[in-house]
Length: 153
Image 1 (cartoon, rainbow, N blue to C red):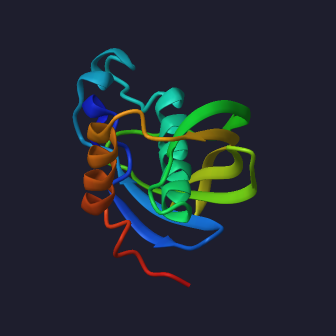
Image 2 (image 1 turned 30 degrees about the vertical axis):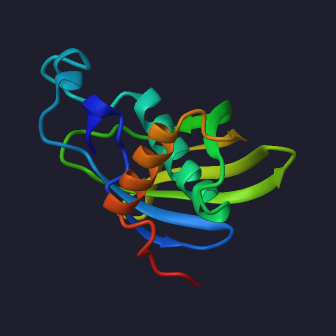
């Protein structure tokens, strides 16, 4: 997890047409923790939502063979069940519920050791890549986290 760059997913563990499983490792130190909270560092809930959104986005990139860029469009029913401190290994999942008309609805979650920490229903909109640079950056990031090499069902 590179919090300062909003690169939340470290590794794709498995991906298929309908779902993705990924891993995110919360760093021991980050400027984010200096203010959230002094003496009691926790990952902000909004960054957990971003982590789920990125996993969902990688699933859509995979499904569409990088033809369109996914953007977060809506967050529904987000629930936070427990705190996430530094140095936590997160299990991130996304499952497709609906895909059509340029929008996808996904059920997403974050767990630690199999215990659910948060979940949400996310809607992502897919659009043509606005620039070749963004497409190249997304392909490079997907390569870095092993999206292309992830086991397929």
